[in-house]
Length: 174
Image 1 (tube, rainbow, N blue to C red):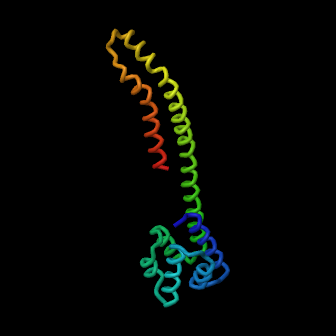
Image 2: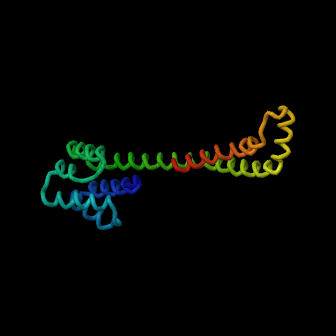
Image 3: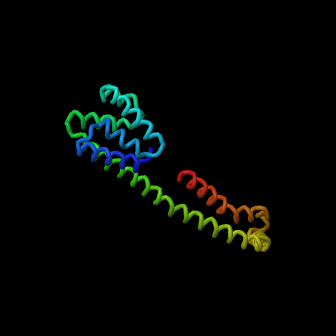
């Protein structure tokens, strides 16, 4: 279920209830204008059961809607302010959707930085690869023959490997 769609449906439902349309009729009108999907299916099930005369409390246990939503709808019915509660729930789900969208947006920047670092590391490693033979000879001279020539490519490509793993991990989380 998409939070923004759920919020829109609840705003519409609250408006219909405020204008005096009964809950079953408002649900029927909403479902007629909605595209196919899980939310429409659940709302149609809710409307059908209410039209048969089933109590709302019993029907809400049969549909797959968020638990918080079902409990708050019951509170709204008991307090005779269902439109007000639906408006509050719509605002809540709209904010929840916006927070999720912002968090995804905030994760984009570090991913871009990681990918740029990975590209720069690959570029620098490919340049230093050409000089790796000279570097390994210089290292052997400095250490008195203690360093092997095989260690230099590993040292050059290690940052690339670490950044590649970090980028893949960040991409998977996003």
